[in-house]
Image (cartoon, rainbow, N blue to C red; front, side, top):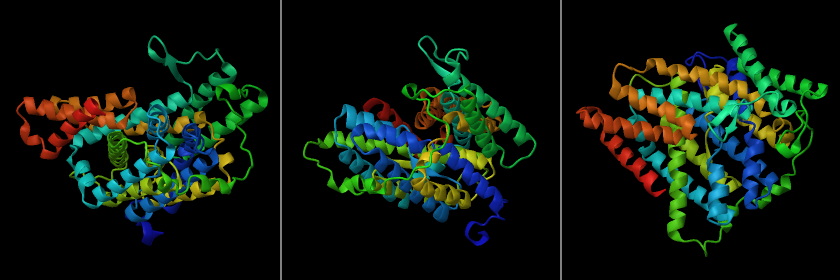
Length: 451
């Protein structure tokens, strides 16, 4: 392990890395239930999607572990899967095999860009101030996701979002929200007391409290409204289903596809995946103190290459774009610093193929405390921003403000980059702006106009 992952150099141990890997997987396990639910609306088989999700996550994360030695875990991306299902296959009416072909082409383009240092150059072009803003923004973003998943924050016609009214639907959404808040308290107390496994224990403890609540009648099953049994079920997966999606990308029928529409779809996948991945790497690496004094991430080329390989492999298996997950920050928060963390998570994704019903039983309110607490840890990057320099502070501020409000990492980066260039350009501080930052600004503006 020491030889493979350089544990001592990264000031970590096998025990810490294993716990971090389990923690990351448990906060990501929801994708095993959500991805089949979303992609199956296209006509794809849910079981086949579940298997392809596990395989794509396993392959991408294994490559990340051994090529880059980073604790980053990959899986089919949320948002990208929705675009795949509801826009490309829904609104635009394309067959899911054509959408998979677009994902495969995207992955191949990313492999080329990663080998030619283009993606690395974009990562390095982002100023350190914006990198701190990205880290803080991702902290707010994942905390917001956690609060939503736990039903603590709900939609509101007047204010967009508001706090749940606990007495209303107490035995479903209300008790879930309450258990999530209790989980945050448990996680925080354990973390303050110095328990390395605080985040993982918090997830398990919250889940256990949920099962107790179900046993006592405090939590009641309401399948129609999305409240399922909290008890894991022992069922085996039907492996023959994978044949329905594996290799389907090579059977796509392009006879009714307009080339212009396909290019728009392709670039949409490219753009969102590119900056979501870069944003995640920036945020998680910043929190883990992996960036060097110049704000660069050593060995980033291999990390980006692993992400590109995962996307291509995922398309062949039969799932939407596979990308680096922001939930990797929970493993980093638990002390994970090397590829061993990723290796453990990858192994669990492989195991999940056989026992998927167990892992899909992990409720979102149980993983919410981890996301909320790690969000706090990542927001701490804000203290390193120089708020006395307005030209540096405002772009960082917009970056971490926009991410949760627009529900997008790439939009947060876009607002940060555009404001950074314009503010420094019109205040005469052009020496701070690199040529690539000008190019990125133009691309972001074009994205909002044309895509």
